[in-house]
Amino acid sequence: MTPTGATSTARHTRHSASPVRTLPRAAKWSALAVGAALVLGAAAIAGSSERSLRAPAETNGLGAGASRAVSGPPAVVAAVVPTATAQPTPTAPATITIVAVGDLLFDSRPRRMIDAKGPAAPLAKVASRLRGADLTIANLESTLSNRGAPVLGKPANLIFNGHPKGALTLASAGIDVVSNANNHAMDHGRIALADTIAALDKAGIKHAGAGLNATRAWAPAYLVVKGRRVAYVAATQIVPSYFLPSATRAGVANGRDMKRLVATVKAARKKADIVIVSVHWGIERSYTANVGQKRDARALIDAGADLVLAHHPHVLQGIDTYKGKLIAYSLGNFLFPYKSASGRESFILRFQYGPKGVANITAVPVYLGAWGEPIVQTGSRARTILGRLAAASKPMGTRVTIKNSVGYVRP
Image (cartoon, rainbow, N blue to C red; front, side):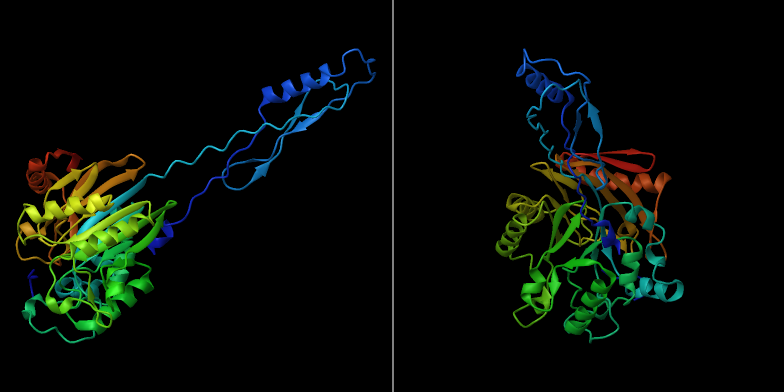
């Protein structure tokens, strides 16, 4: 993980529709006929009058109501007209569009880019694509602080402390929720982690996977997206021993503790319509998901996860499905001045999640520029990046078809 050189929550609103209640025209005339039959043989009444039946107010789905009168035939006597109303049609669960990307680092060149060009600059070239989703997810691979002391026991070039304005970068690009569960969340200790959490909270960005005690580190983030409650669970299997939290010590959720991770997912399943799990795992620079990743991804889906969106290898890995659920084993880097070309190849994963699960999965290729910033690719470089994704996904039975510099993913 050596770098070169050293609110969107407004989208998360509940949508409700008022049911339209109307009196069917056939029922109205049938009721009048019954009333007339009750008085057969009675003297005709001169000067007939019309009787108006007024239907209950109809709504336009936005709360505005309007009444309308329906005229019927002459009435001879007062009759009791039974009220007939249609049962409200249950609202189908909304389909939401989700975008997921990999590791974002706000130290080194991205830190200098913010100083030179402002906080919106690092993600400016992809911001419209990230903001275009209902829910956008990323891994925050550094703290956001100018404080704290470098942790002992790690090489200096692997200790990061990102720019505090990185939270504004995330917000400007429409990123809604991030994972803090990785092997850099505690690089500058408790104080820098506290600053990071405060910066994310102030920017309106949800987060999970790290906290000032074990309870907070394990707590899922919850969001409401188009009326659907989403739980976001994050943990890391790449965890230094001194990053482990306790009742009084800050740290990250330990993804090696699969028993607790599975229990956390099961608990979230009871509270949410959609459960997304983020795991920091795998082998750096390996395009192949290992046996442990595959085993644990399936265990998480068995526990109730709908999506497993992961990272850490710093290169992309394949896309898989299990029981109709989506697994992205590594989303690669996304804002990161990685030293090798392979570590600068990445993609934006976009898909829809609806009542029938995942659909319309696409991958937009990006390459990380001189500052480590993501830039959408076309032409030969796009084909190279998507070709790697296709090759990594093929052993899992997933096909990636490349058309107009976009990868169309077919599980």
